[in-house]
Amino acid sequence: MKVKTILVSQPEPKTETSPYFDLSDKQKVKIDFRPFIHVEGIPVKEVRGEKVDLKNFTAIILTSRNAVDHFFRIAEEMRFKVPDDMKYFCQSEAVAYYLQKYVVYRKRKIYVGPRSFTELLKLIKKHKTEKFLLPSSDKLKPLIPVELDKLGINWTRLDLYRTVVSDLSDLENVFYDVLVFFSPSGIESLLKNFPDFKQNQTRIAAFGNSTVKAVTEAGFKCDIMAPSPETPSMTMALDKYIKQVNKK
Image 1: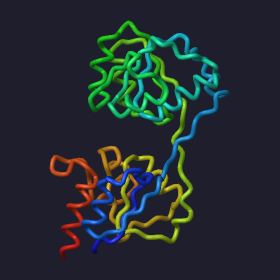
Image 2: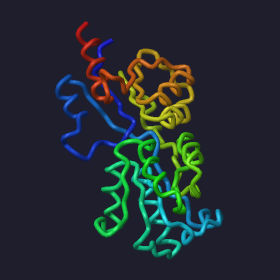
Image 3: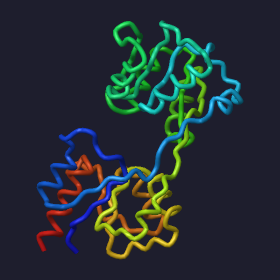
Image 4: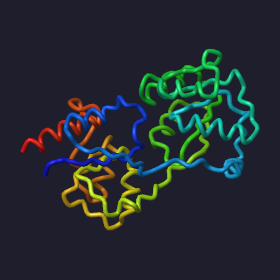
């Protein structure tokens, strides 16, 4: 079956240069965006219950922009003034750049991992005497605590936000040729919103091994997978698939 409609389980891109818009124009397909999950901050009362004193830390490990937002939210609600000499270890340049929303970048000690958490670990290893705080969500990748423990550093995890299933009830009678997922939480949301969902002719696209695994464990077929050497991005994988099926 040809692909004419695609639903991407993420917010609509804010930039007009998004490759999804290029894909839509190039392949003449309709692409809609709808987050299947969203983030909610954990109330400061609950965070206080963890009895973690922010004054005890000399460095912060930031894995996402959500981690940045919610660390500074909690600091403000706890009336904790973040020291100027606090060190920030950011998983990517995007996270480090986002940090400028809260601190004067050039006056802070900021260390940036080029791309992945594994690469950030090399920088953390050089500062083993620091006391690290990891602002986290309730769904932290299992790799992260395992790798931090291996380093033998002094670190503490503090959950500051939760991943929550979005209400998709208005989509109950709306059908798409392709559903695109980027995390196991997206599949969880699909099943919670539509427990009787049948895949039928719907194609499922999944980004990352854990997402592909969640698709198959839910009993669905994963038709489009990324990244791969040939298609490192989801838009490239979709483009390749659409070319194949729409040609027939």
